[in-house]
Length: 302
Image: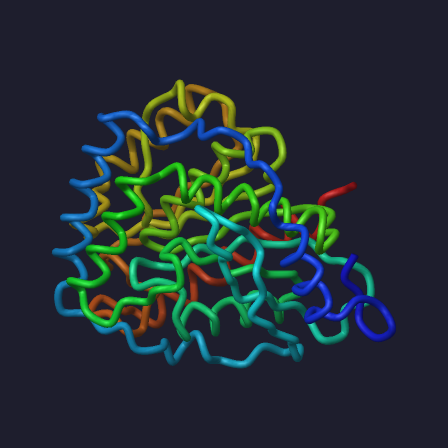
């Protein structure tokens, strides 16, 4: 259990976990069939077009300091294919008892300084945050690099599933988080939804920023986590038609969800390094995200 002062330090937790991580993982249950991979490849192509002229430089908006100081550490949280996976682990400096936690999933660039800064910003709101790495320690500089890294995940989804299962276990068992949610942008938005599928009875909330979604009711049926979907009306990669189909499937299944489609903005409108960045709408979406997390994580009963 992680506590400040006199209790376990983040560095001690990392050392302990590195020694105990060799635990057998559950078999893959998501995203392995040919249809899913074909859809994934098409999505990679769409993202390549959307991000063709974007930059991977750290986000200025992400670097906005929070009202609370945070403590951050690079820690191993999983082992996939006999390779330790390191994430950005961060929590409020004044934390005494374990807080609700978030698995933060990076954009298609990978776990870079911009994502770490966003993780710090989330933690400053009163959460334990683990920004995971689905790219095996790689962070893309060019769109071509990002396309290759994203495509590798599409072709080997079982590794990403294994990664996320261990991230969840790290937050629940090692960090002692009473509740766990998922938050991701773009590539990570789709994996936030996948996390809700991987933990249909256990995840407490999922936030999807313009990520790939599905209208397959068989895949969505087991989910119990409340879902917040944030999308862009002018997104050419994640089209409104697919979002509406996703929304209709959630409605048919009587899920707890909120879908917001912001007019006048395109894909990655919340990323200041992209050509579609819109500061006003990004801040509006951020405020809505914090309200949703406060409702379903911070205020949830044990």
